[in-house]
Length: 502
Ligand code: FAD
Image (cartoon, rainbow, N blue to C red; front, top):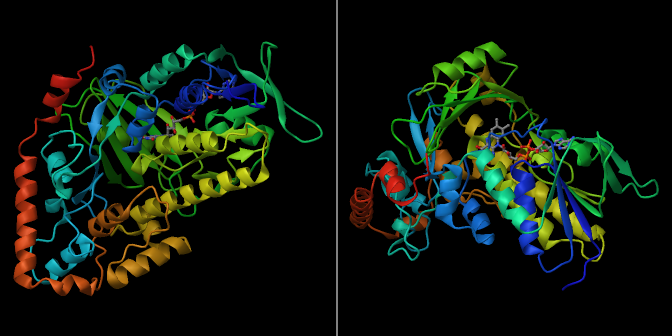
């Protein structure tokens, strides 16, 4: 057994963040004699709406040794090849953001430069025709990618939609089986050590006192430890991402199970639609400055394609991030660490990367200031890069039909994003400030989807003659078309391999 100065780790909160943390820590630090306690309050409940993910969720589940089929059945999950954007560029427009690259890079030059050239030659230049995942999605088909795909065209990622409550339960069973102790109760007070300000204990409203050496704050938006007790501070980004409210409602199962999340731009924000095996998740994310609550609710309900099953639930949030996720002996995860609207389904992946940082820099030998600084630097970088990607969705829209969209077109944007947009506009170069959650072709999707096409392309793409380029593009389109007509429908794939019990 290995040694650690941390004998007792206390996790506050039993939402997706709390149970993801409990499951990972109990597995990854199983060799250390660390007692893990998780405190949650059924009275307070969880936010319960994080149901769409990005492909990194699969490596999280893999890291726990979770069987994919068991997980899908337990959480009523469906597969997700990407996100459909409806009405974003302008009304009656649509494009798809796949978890995949487009085409095949040729002679070391990124494929999208050939698309720009193809456009000038009036050859087919719709990126969707060069994306296997997009074609599968448009046909409501699903297949798992081959582990060693025969061609880059056949390489794509996938994620899941799942029932957030069931996922937390699933992980709870996993963590409890590995020795995590759960305490049901409401924390009323946090005690701090007078000399150094570290947390010494939390007290529940029934008088029970729980004392630990290290605390993981997964208490949601309230940030019970990281903010309310330690006053860490928050960067408010609403000047760039004006949505600050949401309404969510569950509805009947969709008639056709789409293997993607749909986001539809609305008058003051956007509506999500997440298909699960047993029901559909829906919500409207909007800016309260431009839309009253009643109006938002009416918009959401009129945009459902199946019958509502629940009363609408309301949320308010401040987009931004905690100034530090690691402060004193407290590490914040999930909503307690910051919030970026779920337009690209990034929150759960940020929990995952937060857990990775906690485990990589775990203070077995005491808290080291340099480690803390590095974790907080990485946290800021990660949030800022996703922030810029999200702002692009609003800034690049051509809509001006409502005050909200007019505001988005006129608003100032961070210098980092302005630089990226300028360089792409000049020569089609996607500037990456790595590491970034969204890779080159995700940015290409957005520029192309919003019709922000570059003025020029990488001139090395001229190495191919016009005829050679036409031939290469034709081959790729044909291969994508043929391969994407083969797989089962998404519904049939699930019925055959991983249908959840009724
Ligand atoms: P919560 O779920 O709020 O859990 C907080 C926990 O702390 C609860 O167990 C609560 O009981 C406990 N707690 C709080 N105070 C106390 C106390 N005093 N005493 C004891 N216990 C306490 N993410 C995605 O990745 N994809 C999405 O599609 C997505 N959609 C979203 C839509 C909306 C409208 C919102 C608001 C968020 C969405 N998210 C999404 C984010 C996602 O919901 C969260 O990242 C995820 O659920 C994690 O939440 P959490 O565990 O941090 O907080």
